Image 1 (cartoon, rainbow, N blue to C red):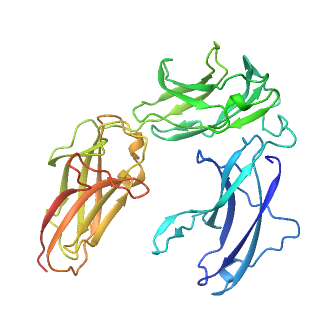
Image 2 (image 1 turned 90 degrees about the vertical axis):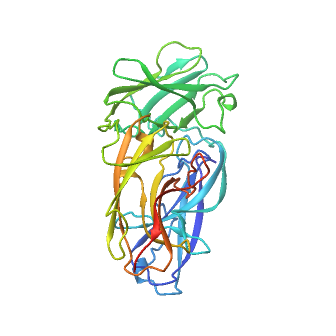
Image 3 (image 1 turned 135 degrees about the vertical axis):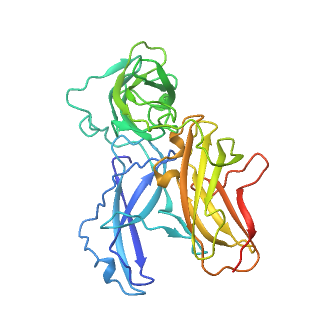
Length: 393
């Protein structure tokens, strides 16, 4: 039940002496990608801590039990149990490794858990509803509170909302909330249709007197300008605003034309980003030297994905000899925050190896998703060739 708990017992084994002190966290995640359990580790009664991981010897085992509870107001459904391992000092996550030794990501999926309705309906206090909050009704439904996880964002950034709804009567049909982003003049900059609790726990399944929490996530439009905005909530069929929260948007300075002196290019990746120009300094790679690659990108469309850029120096055998990967402008200008038509310029520096295999070498640039899938150009290529030739050794 949503107000119960389950014990998850982990058994670890040290392959080598761990270089840092690790801390494990077990969580419930929903189909929406949200976490629906507290992040802090809760231990069963009588738990005896194991020695710090830095003291573990190769082959040594460690018993690591966790108590997992759903957050109050969690909608019934099937959730995934995931475990993550963090550096206790820096909170940097350790990555799960695949069979080939390559990193797969910071979360290991252990299995699933079915959460049923709570045995006792949670109180307003348990749901973190402010004491002075009043229920704002719309027919059979009412909204107690709305909050956002941040008050200031940049274009393209994600904002997590949290709201608490109550079924005053038993709803006869399902509805979704309408969330509007109003700009400083009061005009609508973006609209979202969002489930009140979760997509798998629709309103027509609620009973009178039940209260459920929703934790929807929205992304700010990439092209909005700086200013004081508002997020307001409506329900269909009812006039008036049920709740609102202020949100300040701070947009970066934008460039609308390509700088002079670039070698022109015209390669559109994924119908979203165009490479419009580049320069190499020096004009060709030199074994044992560094190569500064300046790239000018342009947003063709608004993007909901934060693409990553790659510049690879590849040998004739297909192996990458030098590379630079990551989000644009040293991770400071994610593509989700680009306005349509905006030009974003960045410089990537590659260290060319002193010893290179014989044959032709190629310098390539392109974009890819965080899962590694590359964006293709209109002619089906997964990279644009910036330079290709044989190098003197």
